[in-house]
Length: 68
Image 1 (cartoon, rainbow, N blue to C red):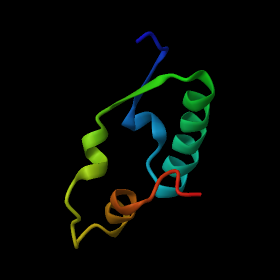
Image 2: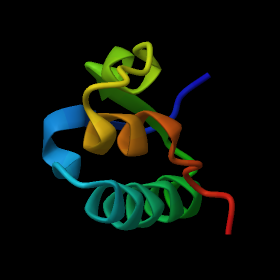
Image 3: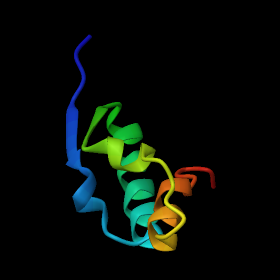
C-alpha cells in the first residue's frame, strides 16, 4: 500500500479542548481528501486517565473528535 503520510505532534493541536477539536477536525478532513495516513505523535496524551483535580485536562481527554 502506498499512501501519503501526514505526521502531526499532539502538541501542534493546541492546548484547549476547543482548539484541539477544531485543528484535528481540519487535519482529518485533509487526510481524508488526500487518502493519507495520519501519524499522530504523542497521541497517548488523549488516552490518559482523568484527574479529578484538573478539570481542563479532563475536558481534553474526554473530547469526542470528529463526531460532528
